[in-house]
Length: 353
Length: 100
Image 1 (cartoon, rainbow over the protein chains, first blue to last red):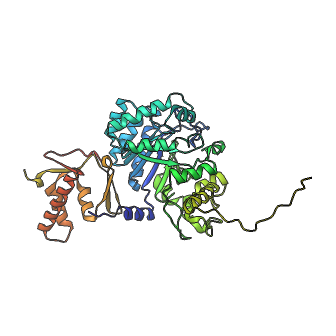
Image 2: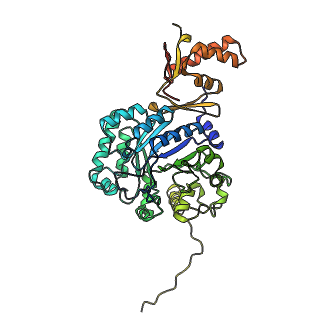
Image 3: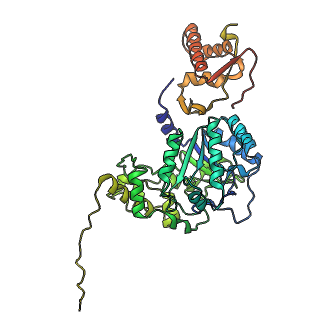
């Protein structure tokens, strides 16, 4: 057997095999998380039916998708979730299930076990009802999520605890990390709150302040892989090794880039994937296309996201202001030095009298 | 009954995809992944529960330029390893493929 998995995946992505697909089943949710980017469709579109999803799964398997994230909204809001998921298992996808964990019962766990998922990823915002419920806006959600986590863990499922980090929960993120590590669960945290799907940016007010971000990079997530990218390096796998599909059959290069490249109710996936002009443009994005990034002193501390640049700053060919902010603070933390400000000006003196 | 007379199929505990002629196999319950070379991928692809091992070996001996005995021995070795790793299963009866 060969032992070159990473090489194989990189090769596949370079040949436009969409190894990872993010399949959204619904935007409906039983929580109202203050930061969430998913917004219920306002235009009265109908969600894809069970059979439409099965057809899409056939097409994804044919194109080469192996890792399938099933997400929402909240996946268990769909009554046909297990019909779709069982079909996905039959088609040999490695499944990742994203859930808030509040609907997990013993009978649901038994059905989940039959799916043999790679991971179940659960959002947990703190280690107290006060913090967690303040974010979900649903009283009692912390207790239900913790019940779900313990039930799944007891039944031997691989769990990932995910924490979007914001001002409301920065005080308890370290407790969630400890909880996950002590219980043999993977821990993932992310301070990047992104604009909502309907374009609104009111949730960005919850982002960490600079001081809080400094604390986060210093104490919670100090891992960083340094990269001095080549100018012709493609920015990410969006539209090459990754795609996202909405509950209405809309195809996107990834969940962060709201540029629809096709409609599966009107076209085949193969036709979209290999013939969309919009997709072609996104695939050709390199660092050299992004204004200001190619000669930026902080680039090796940066995780540029064209999706965020588009949704927050309005220009997919521009830098993401949030990525810039995080890079500057990450640099300070990792090098223990601040940016030098040239052209220091002496302010005009004020009269004391 | 020797192993070659048994039906062989992919285990339902695997997820896999053939990407550019090579199989990538995931074992979700232990979070492991492996890739197979082209010959091993051919065996993996034929392991759909409808063929006995000797039938798979016969097809390989038609397709590949090597001594038939070497093809047989290498194939059986490979299948035994995959059985040990719980990626393949064998049965006296045809197996309904649980993984497409």
